[in-house]
Amino acid sequence: MVRVSINGQPPVELVPYVRYRIGSRSYMEFYIDHESIEGYHGVFDCEPDCVYVIKLLGQTFVNGKEVEVQKLTSESAGEDGLVKLRFGEVEAEMYFDSDSTNDEDTTLTEASVLTKDIKKKLDCSKHEK
Image (cartoon, rainbow, N blue to C red; front, top):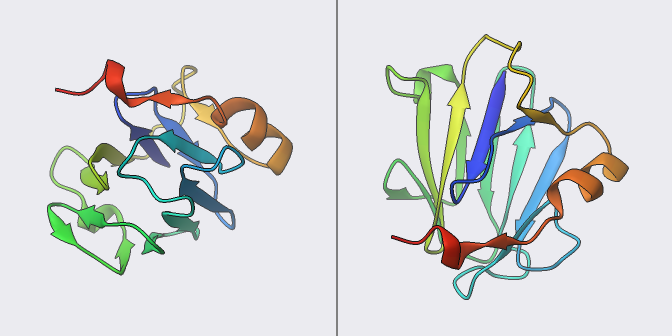
């Protein structure tokens, strides 16, 4: 199971064979309202055994290194199963684990669910350090 938490928000489970758009436009699956986020900033492209983090228009970092495209697997994560991400100035974390029993996680499976569960405005000012 792969989960993503953006800017301290609750983790969201990513589903294989789904592409999740990241950006400052309200129709993105991961909508982030922050001045450092481009309209169509990047993409999570999910496969059964990996996630591709793809930069489109904005700065994207994986474990502190700026990337264009980065394939992430459980081997990419540290001992804690965590990969540190950053989109513009917004911090995020990707978790790789095999425990899918956490009821607090949100699973995104189709466009209508994506729109309903994730299209909440991520207010970056509440979580900035």
